[in-house]
Image (tube, rainbow, N blue to C red):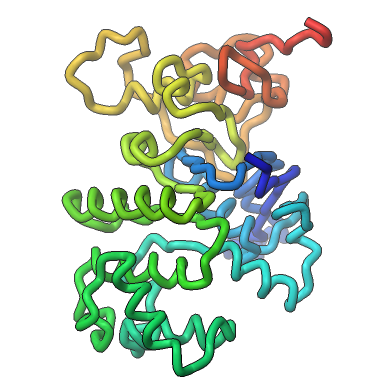
Length: 329
């Protein structure tokens, strides 16, 4: 499949000034995303996983320019998104949409479901006004919402119904790319399964490319073809889903997978939990950012920055444990 999306050195830093910073005259930047490069093919599903605060959501928003990148590029279908003016950005967002985490907060509480979906068609001029209601009814049916819910506001809907409405809104413009940011984490487990199955069915039916952001590896395994693992604003491992689960390479990925509850723990992965907490993104450690928590740390980890991505038996990993491939080898 052709490449639909690329990021090149994508970086997002936020300026943070606390009361103490004002007193001392210092300035600290929150380094949320740090030089990320990834690719996504048309119709492909990529899971983006990591602990809370690792930069997953910021990366998703930066791809859509809901957050402005500090540096780097986003290339969508061969065009630089970071260089787009307002008109070009509007056209881009017809093809790239986001499903947000909170199904209630992502919908306008003053509008009914029907009005919310109709607004999308009206603002973007997708069809004549006389056809909007028919389009809305068809869209709701596609995501499993009955027509009688058109007149209800978000407060009168369940969490699952609100999330389906959010999915319908994202699909209204027939996008090529959908970024789902923790799209099921706020839902009950039984509703999560329904929404995940819906997303899976829609992705296959419509040929969507999807980035599914989650801290739940089990959810990502169900939905995604590839997985990218983030730690402190960097991707530390990326590869096919089953290869990552069968033989994770980076110590951080190993710890995440080992923490998944299972009946059979005889899989060779470390059984102890991941020690400590992630460092503050305002004070990222020298050397490999993961080394203060790593159980396999050795000399270079403490002094040398984590290396660029390296091939490692079916995956790509940014870790000193894996030597770089020699050219021509």
